[in-house]
Image 1 (cartoon, one colour):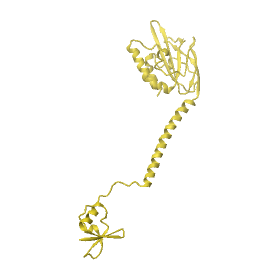
Image 2 (cartoon, rainbow, N blue to C red):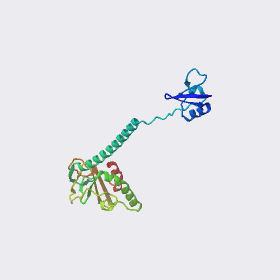
Image 3 (cartoon, helix red, strand yellow):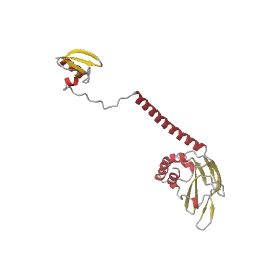
Image 4 (cartoon, rainbow, N blue to C red):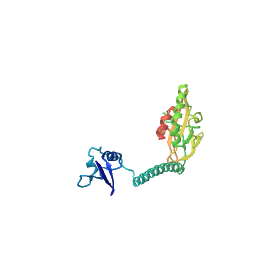
Length: 243
């Protein structure tokens, strides 16, 4: 049997039935194209003539059209721009926070009130101001250094110079005079650390103060705001105030 084919308004053939079936399988012709052979009243879809042809599975994947591609590009560019803007904003915020923080000129007195009510002025107390972020970043190395000291049987003698290798560079540093008075400058948000020790008979008392700077211009360091009488507790104190 020979069959004529009408595809896209153009007639071809005749084709042997086996050959036309092969063409259909290869996709040269479609089952919806029309076919006619001698004895037929009218043209019919080739799918009617070859009902046993396997049906072509529909591609479930969505075709990427130029419009979809353009939308995808716009979305990708938008996301990238947003991420860059966020990163830039954070950098600007960090820079501006550090640059435009208001300065603080601080003064005060360092003293301890004994159980008997006597006020002991602490001369040569060391007072340093550190950047809050730098102190937080230095905590792991400072903790390791103090632990090494304890393991070797020694302890921090509350001299900043003995832990210079583990601390960031101080924004400013001073010592109290013989009357326990001091003056120092920093910026709002910085952290003031003051250390001192006092010999009481056969014992050595060590004191640590940790004060976040505000706009206050006068701060006395005494029992009232003393954070520890053990200098080795400084790690926990710094960890709390540098977050």
